[in-house]
Image (tube, rainbow, N blue to C red; front, side):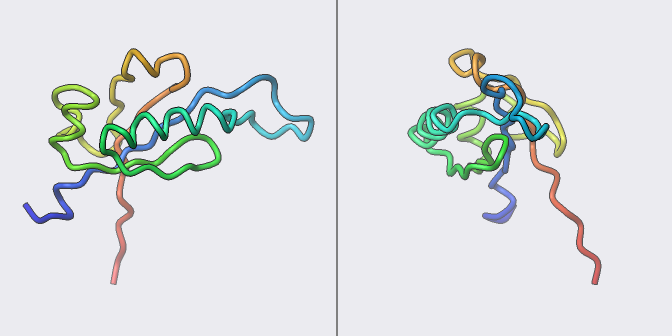
Length: 104
């Protein structure tokens, strides 16, 4: 397994804050919620980046097992992972990223 294969990227969909904006666009999480989850996961060793509806984080497989529970690091692309109890009030879903396939 190469170093790149040891890294797993996960996508966190955060629960929206309040009601939808007037424009009709889907509601987004509040900035303080994004910061809270990012700070929590970063403190545990994950590398996280904010997106409009949540976070994208990456970490070695073994670290994901410690942070999200046994088997999280070996979950298949597209699989849903359990949300840690301390984040359940703000995290809707955690999914293992499906890497795009590029053709020559």
